Length: 119
Image 1 (cartoon, rainbow, N blue to C red):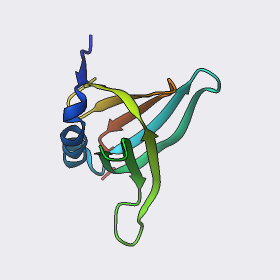
Image 2: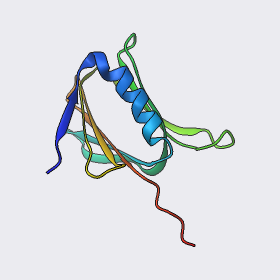
Image 3: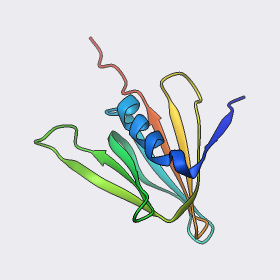
Image 4: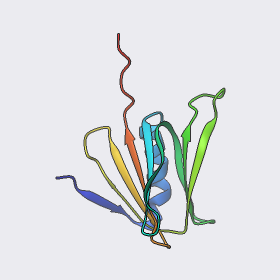
Protein backbone atom coordinates (compact mmCIF):
# COMPACT_ATOMS: atom_id res chain seq x y z
CA UNK A 1 0.00 0.00 0.00
CA UNK A 2 1.27 3.47 -0.87
CA UNK A 3 1.67 6.00 1.93
CA UNK A 4 0.40 9.56 1.53
CA UNK A 5 2.54 12.41 2.86
CA UNK A 6 1.00 15.83 3.56
CA UNK A 7 3.20 18.90 3.07
CA UNK A 8 2.89 21.80 5.53
CA UNK A 9 2.12 25.15 3.90
CA UNK A 10 5.51 26.60 4.85
CA UNK A 11 7.20 23.79 2.87
CA UNK A 12 5.20 24.14 -0.35
CA UNK A 13 7.73 26.38 -2.13
CA UNK A 14 10.60 23.98 -1.50
CA UNK A 15 8.48 20.93 -2.31
CA UNK A 16 7.48 22.25 -5.74
CA UNK A 17 11.04 23.37 -6.50
CA UNK A 18 12.32 19.86 -5.68
CA UNK A 19 9.50 18.29 -7.69
CA UNK A 20 10.69 20.27 -10.72
CA UNK A 21 14.32 19.30 -10.20
CA UNK A 22 13.53 15.61 -9.75
CA UNK A 23 10.85 15.12 -12.43
CA UNK A 24 11.46 17.68 -15.20
CA UNK A 25 10.82 16.03 -18.56
CA UNK A 26 8.75 13.19 -17.10
CA UNK A 27 5.37 12.42 -18.62
CA UNK A 28 2.69 14.46 -16.84
CA UNK A 29 -1.06 14.10 -16.54
CA UNK A 30 -3.26 16.71 -14.86
CA UNK A 31 -6.68 15.53 -13.71
CA UNK A 32 -9.35 17.76 -12.17
CA UNK A 33 -11.81 16.22 -9.72
CA UNK A 34 -14.83 18.45 -9.22
CA UNK A 35 -18.14 17.61 -7.54
CA UNK A 36 -20.14 19.61 -10.12
CA UNK A 37 -18.32 18.58 -13.32
CA UNK A 38 -16.88 15.18 -12.40
CA UNK A 39 -13.37 13.94 -13.21
CA UNK A 40 -11.73 15.49 -16.26
CA UNK A 41 -8.22 15.23 -17.68
CA UNK A 42 -6.79 18.61 -18.57
CA UNK A 43 -3.78 16.95 -20.16
CA UNK A 44 -2.11 13.56 -20.49
CA UNK A 45 1.41 12.52 -21.46
CA UNK A 46 2.96 15.95 -21.95
CA UNK A 47 6.48 16.67 -20.68
CA UNK A 48 6.54 18.13 -17.18
CA UNK A 49 8.28 21.52 -17.32
CA UNK A 50 8.01 22.98 -13.80
CA UNK A 51 5.96 23.55 -10.67
CA UNK A 52 6.07 26.39 -8.18
CA UNK A 53 4.22 27.97 -5.28
CA UNK A 54 3.91 31.75 -5.01
CA UNK A 55 2.99 32.61 -1.40
CA UNK A 56 2.33 36.28 -2.20
CA UNK A 57 -0.43 35.45 -4.69
CA UNK A 58 -1.23 32.13 -2.95
CA UNK A 59 -1.12 30.14 -6.18
CA UNK A 60 0.48 26.89 -7.33
CA UNK A 61 1.54 26.85 -10.99
CA UNK A 62 2.22 23.67 -12.98
CA UNK A 63 3.79 24.01 -16.44
CA UNK A 64 3.63 21.18 -18.96
CA UNK A 65 4.47 20.81 -22.62
CA UNK A 66 7.38 21.98 -24.71
CA UNK A 67 10.74 20.67 -23.62
CA UNK A 68 13.03 23.07 -25.47
CA UNK A 69 13.40 26.77 -26.32
CA UNK A 70 11.93 26.06 -29.74
CA UNK A 71 8.82 24.49 -28.19
CA UNK A 72 7.95 26.49 -25.05
CA UNK A 73 5.56 25.46 -22.29
CA UNK A 74 2.13 24.73 -23.75
CA UNK A 75 -0.01 24.83 -20.63
CA UNK A 76 0.22 26.56 -17.28
CA UNK A 77 -2.28 25.14 -14.82
CA UNK A 78 -2.92 27.45 -11.86
CA UNK A 79 -4.45 26.47 -8.53
CA UNK A 80 -5.53 29.58 -6.64
CA UNK A 81 -5.76 29.55 -2.84
CA UNK A 82 -4.75 25.93 -2.21
CA UNK A 83 -5.54 24.55 1.23
CA UNK A 84 -3.86 21.14 1.12
CA UNK A 85 -0.94 19.51 -0.72
CA UNK A 86 -0.01 15.86 -0.40
CA UNK A 87 1.80 13.25 -2.45
CA UNK A 88 2.31 9.53 -2.88
CA UNK A 89 5.11 7.58 -4.53
CA UNK A 90 3.44 4.58 -6.20
CA UNK A 91 6.79 3.29 -7.54
CA UNK A 92 10.34 4.63 -7.55
CA UNK A 93 10.69 7.57 -10.01
CA UNK A 94 6.88 8.09 -10.05
CA UNK A 95 4.91 10.64 -8.07
CA UNK A 96 1.26 11.60 -7.63
CA UNK A 97 0.60 15.06 -6.20
CA UNK A 98 -2.84 16.05 -4.92
CA UNK A 99 -3.78 19.71 -4.38
CA UNK A 100 -7.08 20.80 -2.85
CA UNK A 101 -8.32 24.34 -3.52
CA UNK A 102 -10.62 26.38 -1.25
CA UNK A 103 -13.62 25.61 -3.50
CA UNK A 104 -13.07 21.86 -2.98
CA UNK A 105 -11.70 21.19 -6.46
CA UNK A 106 -8.94 18.59 -6.40
CA UNK A 107 -6.08 18.69 -8.90
CA UNK A 108 -4.10 15.49 -9.40
CA UNK A 109 -0.67 15.71 -11.02
CA UNK A 110 0.66 12.30 -12.05
CA UNK A 111 4.33 12.13 -13.03
CA UNK A 112 5.85 9.09 -14.74
CA UNK A 113 9.23 8.60 -16.45
CA UNK A 114 9.09 8.89 -20.21
CA UNK A 115 9.04 5.45 -21.83
CA UNK A 116 12.29 4.49 -23.51
CA UNK A 117 12.32 4.58 -27.29
CA UNK A 118 12.74 1.19 -28.99
CA UNK A 119 16.11 0.30 -30.46
